[in-house]
Image 1 (tube, rainbow, N blue to C red):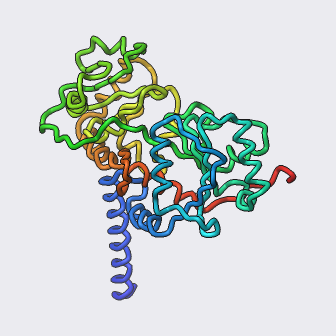
Image 2: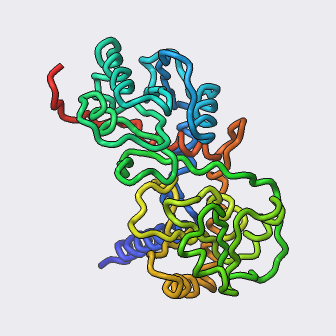
Image 3: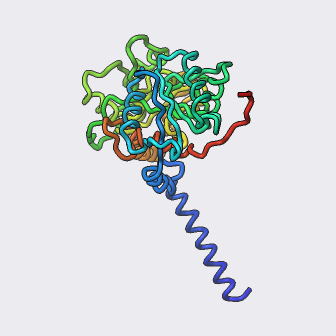
Amino acid sequence: MSTASFSLLLCLSLFTYTTVHSKLLSQLTSPYLSPTTIFPHYQNMLEAFKIFIYTPDEAFTFNSSAESLFYASLQNSTFVTHDAEEAHLFFVPFSSNLSTRSVARVIRRFRENIPYWNRTLGADHFYLSCAGLGYESDRNLVELKKNSVQISCFPAPDGNFIPHKDISLPPLASSQAPYTPANKTASFLGYFRHGGIKESILVKELVNDPDFLIESQPTDLLTYKERLASSKFCLFEYGGDVSGIGEALHFGCVPAVITDRPIKDLPFMDVLRWQEIAVFVPLGGVKEMKRVLVRTCGDRHEQMRKLGVKASQHFVWNESPQPFDSFHTVMYQLWRRRHTIRYPRRFTV
């Protein structure tokens, strides 16, 4: 091998090593699945993304605050276009209280009278449904459920969420006003705020354990923030009250989600590295849970805590949307789904 060839090979090897090392370092210090592309892609979304909103038949409301805030933010955003031909996606508005039969009539009207639904059988459409839609036999509901992007509340009822296309809204937190905790060692291994209506088996097992602080609603917001800041882990039962998960991230309390099955509807699953900002604990008793949490302490916990704080900006809802908040991150997920797939036609028109 000539000196020139060897030098070229060495340069290529060093370049490859530097590139790989840089990517690995970026992943270790970032909460994002794609840390090198999210920001330019986000900027492209802000500049180009267009949504056409169908006119609803009548005035309507949503059952959840997160749904209402998302819809209001969308209506007042620059993403909305009145020219359907330039739209990337189409929003189908209907009330949370609308019966499945009435929803089917809405889709039938679009299919029969408006050309855009039939181009992709609804694959470039999306809708809000906090509880999500179940499986129905009506052709219109089948297309809506199978093809369109559903935005539901977290957690969605079992069977009402299709992971590869659907999106879940992060819970609406009570407050994330500025608060800087003192630099001190966490007082508790875990903190669990339960609803106080009916104590779960977990609460009964943990209430007398000195490593955990268990309570219903704290006396005031400042006390609640102090609880989060003084605990290594914040416990959440999947399927129960998860409204504080964004606040836990914000205040450096690593979420420990207790579940009896794989979770497929986490907010921003295609944006965030959830395994690096939260612990998922199989349902198996307090002894097993403590073993998992203790094993995650030390340097691993500190890294998760820092990444969680970085990720927490995406869990903030604002009356007037701000960059990278919940509204804009949901929009980013929609932007990533704008390249639609036309599904095989299984019905005759």
